[in-house]
Amino acid sequence: MKTRSSVVIYSGSFLHHGKHSSFHSLTHYLTDFTILDVTWYPAAWLPNGVRARTMALWRQISEWQLYPLLIDSKLKCIHFLYPENFIFRSHKWKRHHRFILTVHQPPSYLPVMQRAGHRGFFEALRIAEGIVVLDEASQRDYRYFAPNSIIKHIPHGVDVNFFHPSKSSTRKPVVLTVGNWLRDYEAWLRVVQAAASKRSNLEFVVLADPTLYRALRHRIPHPCPKVSWVWGVDDVQLRRLYQDAAVLFLPLHDAVANNAILEAMACGLPIVATGLRAVIYYSGAALAAACNNSDPLGTLEQIENLLLDRERWLAASEAGRHRAATLFAWPFIAEQYRNFYKEILA
Image (cartoon, rainbow, N blue to C red; front, top):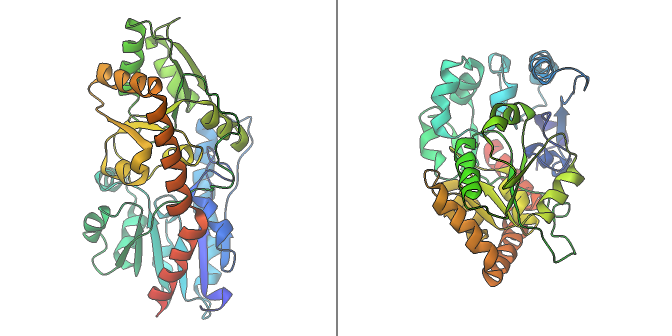
């Protein structure tokens, strides 16, 4: 492998991610390279919208920290972990060094990004030597934007030492939904309404942005089923949500990878989710049922049937934990990146 200074990994984290619960966690397993971490969080008392805008401005300013590195002859490669969010002008500074970009957005979302003016990201795609996709089937779609790149599939990962099943064997009849990005909360709401019409004893718990709760709260039936909305949890509280729930319910518009799916699998939590290509790949047998977003009654029945079938539930739980630990643990993923660095620098 090259010297420590030959590869720089440029990254940062987001407000809703903890130390153990984001793609940024990969850097903990690549400390043999130079890590440029530009994570910074504005004051917690600021409104969420202001915090988000302030962080976006900070990322643009922070990119200048790359400039002295990019003119250093020792640098051979820079790996952007979140190029969609962290590349603004650094594509203009590219000289002898190579670019590697790990892309996170499904191909269906790229036209939206183009219309929104993410010019730096698309210019970086065009000139990058290496593109990493999190979903193997996305390789063909990204080839259009990166015609001269080596495009490699390396999966997302998960911290299987931190996210693990609880020692307790009892779980509540809780249907857990986690996250905001590309989630289909209209489909989620229709399932909750179907549960209300059946007077189901299920409890729905959602970990998501409070603005989403404020948008949906007047449409959520009550008092049955019980619906709880939480936000602002730390990693330990997040792990407890997975460990206490009976199923992860994740209706999605699209995905190439998903933190919640991997964390649920690592915690032995079976999954009912939209039957997308990437969901099926990551979940394997942990996907107890692939749901149809337009069939709320059918989805509710899939969830209820799973919770009534203890043997099937245990099989999905054990399969998910095994798959997470053997295929997606961060040390395995980090080694694939080391090999890709060698390939790009050869």
